[in-house]
Image 1: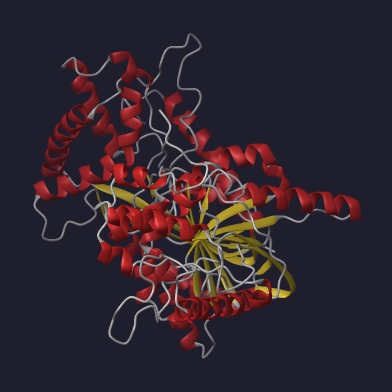
Image 2: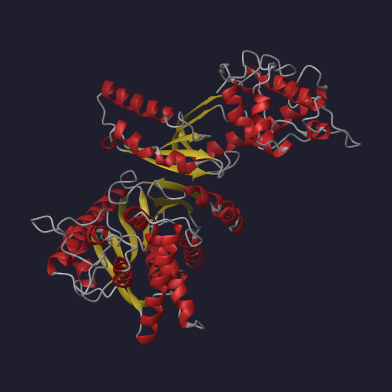
Length: 603
């Protein structure tokens, strides 16, 4: 288990991880030992651009060859505190991040509230001694907290390598920030920056001496590109700089050598989660009674990033706590891994986590990471997980099924985008065949990742008959066909478009779980949910609105790519679709069949 603290999201974010993988493989070959699987955790503040970072992972996996057994997750949170379970990590790395403080140091104003470090933004030759003392005091507090946090998270004998900028003399750090402060002061004299803002601004940064940190440190060359990258958001917030003012600041001649140039997704409703709660509770209770490790590793597959993305995690935490209280046992720490495709909006998801942490009591010990990648394949090291959950995600296929065209290349499912009453039998067979391949791969992958006795709870949309799923997608296909008749959609595009989705029957799920053989079935529960998610106190118009919003959320990107819809055409489609949905709701019951299955990993 390897963590990179303060990873950022730029082109070098994965460089260290790449080196670590190569070194471990080379060392194991030299020692004639088997190479371990690697769990890699990229840590930074929730505001880091994890979305960009995760989108670079597929090419990284291709370069490093996924079969080498490297599984990457992102862990949002400040490293000045716990971000991982106890005794979880074997190796910690941090490069050019620990010299950033948790906050601007206290004590930079006099008792009368006058700024002590006028005209400077960091320790400079003209700074009074109190400024240096305040910065060192903050660094000492932060670095001590960093070390004590890592001490709890690292196993005995684990290693940590830190690289950060240092200084020869703590009173005279000779920092590039002294020059940056001089540049800002020049802009004050030119009337481009308010003097009061400069007087109150200080960098949350400290460059310690070797003696202060008692470790080997090396000084790195810094260019203005790096300085701008790490300070731009701070300066923009402090001085209200727009792009033009920021550019003006960083091209000034006071910076030596720098001159101007001429240049996903599944949606989980609260109703669906609530209906599956009894199965979730029973499965977790039995897990805690039979197998209660010091740290419970939990994965939510296909988490998405909407308002309900962390709802299941909150439920799991509550059930585990309540179960442990009833058993008079100490609640374990929780390592929680939120999984979805790399294109998922992990930035929004991670930015919602601080609110979750504030709602939870700190002593609960819940540490959340994001794990980008397809769950139709390995995502975690072997025997790593104790509990897996997936709600409204496993019915999405890895691809549109093959076999939806005749031998002559003609589409078999004309006018439909999914299995419908008018679809020939070969269409249903093709969909079932693709679901079988995907679901078996899902089960095999989880079987390798889960410990013996681990539990898995899946909720997915189902159907009573595999060749007649009576799906809302049949209505969406009818809406698109109406637009073909109106000349708004090309007929050939509709003929060739099919949804990568399959709603299996209960018997199909049961047969596949038993055929794969790694899990024993514990519970299979069927229930129905209205297309809108909730019929209580809802008019047909409101129910239709809710149903259409849900379907639009999960299909819009697919439809935009397939039919080249702009926003106006997309709005037109879903206005027509809403009319059809409302008409169907007025005539008959409109419900999804939900299947919730609980299973146990065999030894």
